[in-house]
Image 1 (cartoon, rainbow, N blue to C red):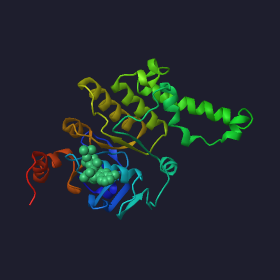
Image 2 (cartoon, protein in one colour; image 1 turned 120 degrees about the vertical axis):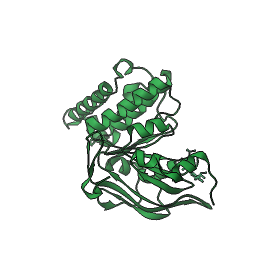
Image 3 (cartoon, protein in one colour; image 1 turned 90 degrees about the vertical axis):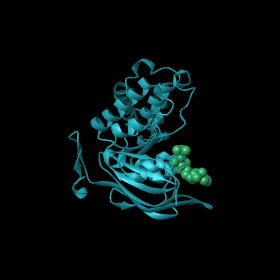
Image 4 (tube, rainbow, N blue to C red; image 1 turned 180 degrees about the horizontal axis):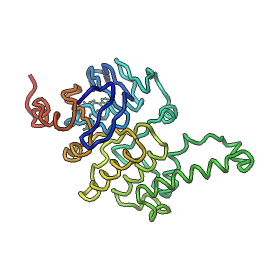
Length: 273
Ligand SMILES: Nc1ncnc2c1ncn2[C@@H]1O[C@H](COP(=O)(O)OP(=O)(O)OP(=O)(O)O)[C@@H](O)[C@H]1O
């Protein structure tokens, strides 16, 4: 990879920009357990960045540090050139960070459309009083705009035909797609995907891969994903961070990481010294 301060061009010809988020010497401890030990890496504008590693390596913990949900025990997180302090969930969303979860977190009784609309809550500027006088105060226009954005996402993810269906009735793969739609509704700068293909069949995985690549392309969204399916990771990621026992053991383009001996050993379960 070339001069990282200037960004870089991917093998498929996409221009990746400057540093969007920098994680500096991150350590995270839960009592006596060190989930992350002194890890540094950056996330660049427009990049698809994967975090991989065996079970218990610390990947979810790292995603929670990136999202601002966990405050690291040591180290700093810089986002868009500013050092980030403790934040409330709505502040995280307003900063432009959205995520999906390992276990689907949707409202089963609500329609697909209403679930996706909940993803726009942090974008709504008008308060309840304005909603009461919604026509005069501009709340009506805002609602139309919100609906418009949501409809665009529904079209993009090809879920028009289920927009009125309660989420609880959908098969697993479609629920995951609705979760993605809800995260996109917040128009995030960085989208965090925690095992987006887990539990999917081959066809659902192919669809999800296509949507991730397309949304990165169409909306310019930077994506950080944790994924166990190595084929998927190597196919769609620009750069990969590899964790093992809370440490970073590799970082680079898929080909570099694939040929890294420490990574091969970690995946083959070679004993540590
Ligand atoms: N809230 C917590 N309290 C205590 N220990 C935790 C907590 N969260 C994670 N850990 C521990 O931190 C380590 C890293 O866990 P983490 O879930 O981040 O790994 P992971 O790589 O995401 O694993 P998996 O692939 O199985 O999801 C593990 O030893 C785990 O038991």
